[in-house]
Length: 155
Image (spheres, rainbow, N blue to C red):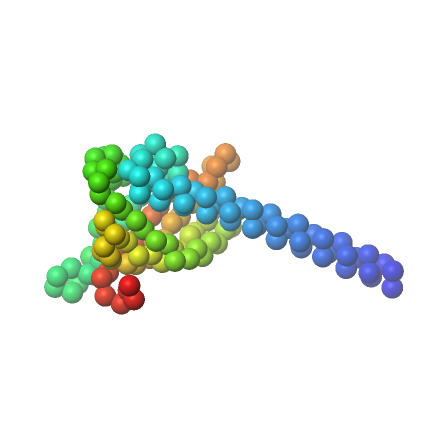
């Protein structure tokens, strides 16, 4: 009986340690996402560059005026230039409603429903889907796709 008790205690300790490590890793990933959005809100390309890979892929999907789904790929360089030229008086705020973070080794996916406000006025809502890669030093965003809509947002 004592051996069984010792084995159960060891298994429990291993589970707690592994779970704590996974939570810590998820918190690191969440910090990357938060820094990305802080950079977006402030027009801070230096902060954004700390969070993204050099070959970042950016895409968005939305419904056009005719009601057809559209997938648009954006150039990361153009995105950074537009961010750098953001007027200081323009206030961009993307309110993330939750984080669903999944990790497998050096790959992570983060799903974040959001509502976007421009100068304190509701603009649109949707979901961001981030793919991140751990390059051995840190987590970086390698792919970002989002949906954008104005209906069904409960704003």
